[in-house]
Amino acid sequence: MRIKLILLSMLLASCGYLSSPVLSPYKMDIRQGNYVTPEMRDKLKIGMSRQQVRYVLGTPMVSDAFHGDRWDYVYLLEQHGKLVEKQRLTLYFEGDKLVRMDDGGQPGQTAE
Image 1: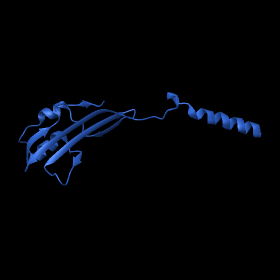
Image 2: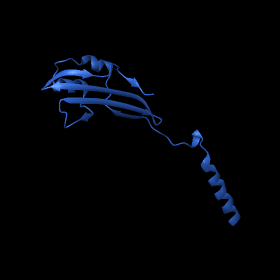
Image 3: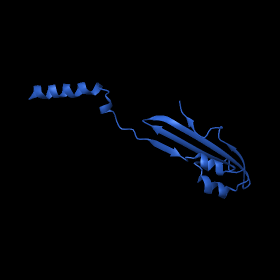
Image 4: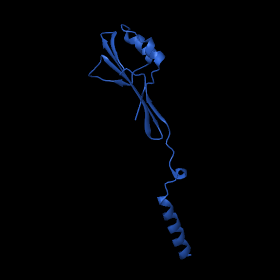
């Protein structure tokens, strides 16, 4: 009985070094943030109120107490544990009106 237990322990321990895709853990796709489509960006116009912007894009992902006139819409997509897509849209307000938009000139950036 003792020999069988030792052989079984050795067999199980020897399987620990295998790095086969069959034995790898499942990593789900993770979407975080506000996904902003090109159609949504086209609806944004300088001079829109905060309420109109919130209606078009939704509530911003990042709200900073120190920069109340700046809204950041950030979107990240991870597939199989790697960053695949990253978007960032920053809106600047003066009072209640949209005065500037900064999106880096690209609707969606693919991570390297």
